[in-house]
Length: 92
Image (cartoon, rainbow, N blue to C red):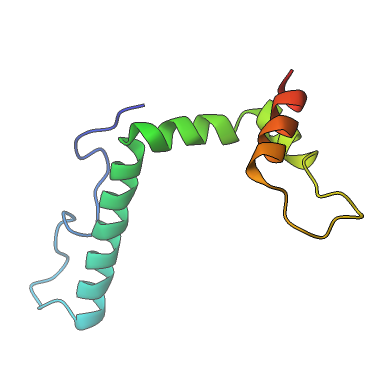
């Protein structure tokens, strides 16, 4: 997925309603909206992020994650090799 251009208007490029100067709140909101939009576009154009999203929305992956619970007699965290092994078993 690759998104470019100005598909939707943001607070920064909407036409002004009145000739009055923007308040501090509206300036802050405009800045926050622009920052959020830039961050979202950056994430959508990042291949590693895209691959991660594809993996976590795959129903098979969520099923595998649900079955990877810790053993009831072991309160320690599962190590990486055990987690990878369980994931491989549940992915088949």
